[in-house]
Length: 223
Image 1 (cartoon, rainbow, N blue to C red):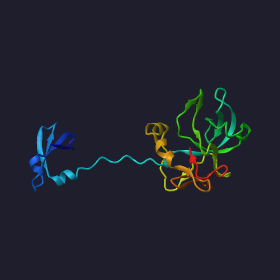
Image 2 (cartoon, rainbow, N blue to C red):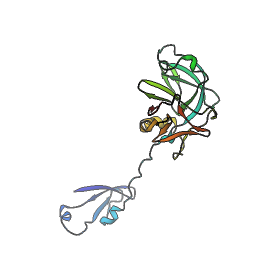
Image 3 (cartoon, helix red, strand yellow):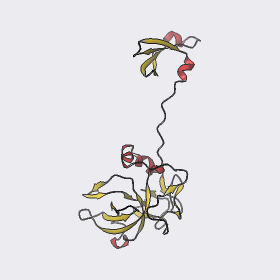
C-alpha cells in the first residue's frame, strides 16, 4: 500500500507499508528505494514525519501594488470609445503616463485636468480600443456611482501610498499578471464609513495624511 513519496539524496523514493503492519502495535518501518543508487534503507515512522514540507507560497497583500500620487495634466475623448477618456498623468516620472479610464458617464471632460488622483502604476501597458494604457486610475464605486480616490492636496506627486503593516516591495508588472495578484488583493479594498480607502480596514496613507474618496463615498468598492 503506497502512502507517500519521500525525496532522499535528490532521488525519487517511495515509502511502502504492508497491510499487516497497519494492524500491529509496532511502528512500521518505511522502506526507501533510491532510484539513482539502487539501494534500500529504513526510516522509522518518527523520522518519516520529520521530512520537511515544501515551503508555503508567500501571501499576496496590498504591498504588492505600486500606488502613486498623481495629477491629470491633459485629458481628451477617446476617438473610438464613447465610455473612455484618455489622460496624461504625472506620477513623478520623466514622462507622464498615458492611461485610459471609463469615466465619461461620471465626470465632465473639463473637470479632469488638474485633478489629483491615485494611480496603480505597476500594470503592463495594454491597448483599450487601440489606445495604449499604462496604469489604472483608482476609484471608489457604489450603486452605479464612481468617485476618484484622492490623495491629500499637499502629498508629493509620485509618492507611493502606504498601508500600515504591509511594508513589502511592489511586484513587477509581469508578476502582477502571472500570479493574478489583483484577484487576490482587490476583494480586500473598500472605503470605510468616512470614505477613506482601506485594505482590510487599514487606510491608504501618505506622508501628509490619508487618501479619501472625492465626495466621501462610504463603504464602496475600490479598484
